[in-house]
Length: 327
Image (tube, rainbow, N blue to C red; front, side, top):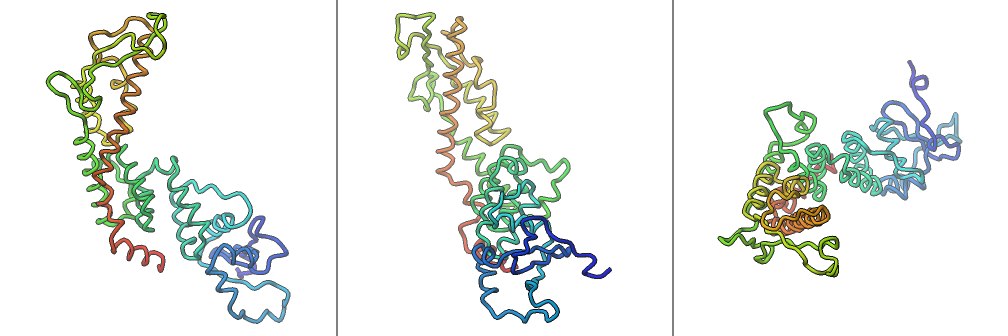
């Protein structure tokens, strides 16, 4: 079968008669595009088009010049749509992002790089944190690598089960080792940051206050909403033992917000209200206490900078980035 017989035309908007250059993908799909748009989107193409061009085919002098590229039509279509004034394609899989990002770096298309980095930071792709981490390391993307490394804390890696081969194949042994080091350092920093409780049962986190205060208009209508009309004593020692247990199992501070026991009255005694409205108010106070604790732990963990072990601030990472772009 001849090339003419196997080639096909790309979908709109890459089928315009006004195009002045044609990109031929590796699977022989023709993308009729405009030099001015490619030049604005890519310094690579801007330089290419500024050089003397081959003479036009004598048999069809009015036909635009054709440039073969090694990317397949799916990658080329995604990349060009990001650069054209049309809706961006959904970069909804790891493989799709990796391929488009490699092409965007190769052709120095900033819009493509930005779109891919945004996709890697999306909640949907971060549900596969190890895969995102592998891509971020491959292209030396510090911010995305740190985000993905932190996301791996949600579900500790279990190598006794089926391995995520697609992700591991893209990771060097050094990158995987550094990720495991990060997880250990983050966990250690989180456990060290858990507040202490003195012999009187007072927590160091709440300035020695062992009570939670609630206001209930049903019980104490004469008090304003800013009054502390009832108080409940909290077993902070038991509370923080539960915090430690949660972080031991899942060293991700967000796991504390999802733990039902920490938001229940199980650690409350002496003054636990019986009024339904008071119980609702107390549950709200407990939820706020957990949220403040999470913010506190995050600040304390940040002081330890566990992400530094990932090695994105040294010369090796900069060298790795140069090699990736050149490749």
